[in-house]
Image (cartoon, rainbow, N blue to C red):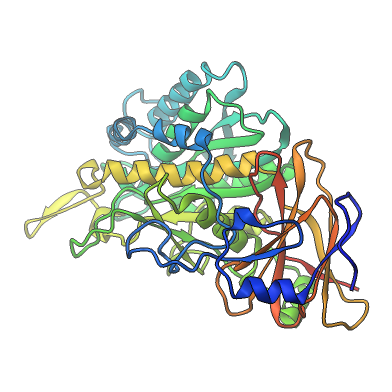
Length: 487
């Protein structure tokens, strides 16, 4: 058992079992922890329906919104979001196979309007935001009968401190009706997915005037309904460029808080996050089977981070994390990112009304079908945008997720020694070690360990799950890195 040392880039600090057990019995605020002192989550219960009540209280790793973040979120405008949704619906159809050279109808008209809007937002950025059309020709494939140009519209806000670190938020601007190959019938696509595009575009507008530390990409992609083609192309471009994408959110069907039976849940957003990584190698699978970690994929850590930063009074929302990649028989634009090893997750409204998505616009037995703007809740979409904004801004403000986190297993001991690589961010202040019971969904204990690259805790690695997160000088904290064995 090593002794507590002064903070340094390569020192080892220790946390005693007495401090650990004392924290387990207490309800101390996380911000009150001294280096090497463990603190537990706040056990206070919140009223049902209040932000943060999804698991009976805020996690130990929760981060309070800064004054700067609160000001940013207040600028999100539900009237602008409504105008965006209605404008996109006005193009008649945005089917990927629809006309691309008509100025008022079809996916080409929608593409050009999105591009012009994002360019107007970029004018307020002082050159920090650039907008591009990311196009390619998709040869005939599933749901693509002829060679088709697919175009993503991207606004990239370059980071001011670590621009090489990238976070992505997207929605898809293509739409469909009952027959996925019908490229001519009206397909307004208000909820699916003008709502998600409106989230991405409104965040681009609000953040264009600011200087995030890391780079944020605001995307509107095409080809989703035909098979995630646009997102796959975007993810492939990031991979080919060697981009350090540390988080991606797709907003797909985030426009309504009303279910098919008329019940409403206007303060909840679902966040789908996979467990076993889509990109897992056989070697990684063997390690996971040996030590666990099915609930500790990068996507799950990203989802916990969203709970930590966006389930609070600044957004007015509960984030309901769903432990699966997507809904039954469905898929979204986060999947191509997951398949390439990027942490990614999907936002979707709490209970869908299937009469208002993937439907021909019609009245049948007195019931209106079709994905029309009149069925959207624009205040709800604005709150979803605040959830995305809180998570993205904090991700960009904090240091990156620690790399090479490992648990030392060279000798058998009832203590746990963790090691990790020190980040290169100039605003890096230090690290925290977190842990929880193996059956707990969220991190329950936090230790401030300082600017070190190893720490020993007098708890058995066989009994709990550990993690490491980075802390910036402003106090913003990264997602947790889940360690693997180091022999």
